[in-house]
Length: 103
Image 1: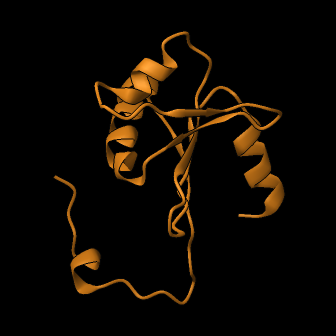
Image 2 (image 1 turned 90 degrees about the horizontal axis):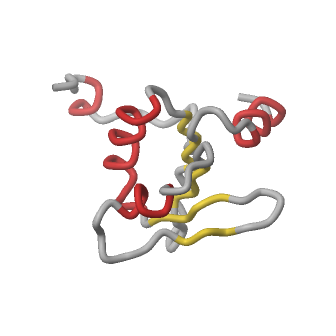
Image 3 (image 1 turned 180 degrees about the vertical axis):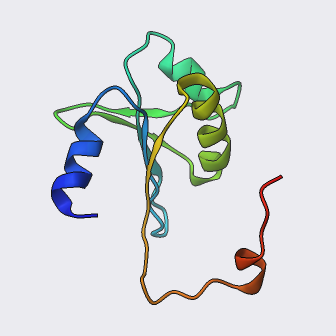
């Protein structure tokens, strides 16, 4: 995806966006359509609270371990979600990945 498309996806406000970062110590970044209960919904009864990063590119930061649960719950709540994540064209999937079936 080119930079203009990524920028458009990140800045739109109708569909949730998750930026999955893979660097050591980096947290996932999330943009949600505005709702008064976003913090509570993101936290989902966990001890750790999501962190709001304000400014022109305002977003939430969450622990990486919340990624799968967040995606599943966002699909239930919003019906769709954008996921932006690193991709290497030369990366070769393991056999288990290639033969995986969604349950």
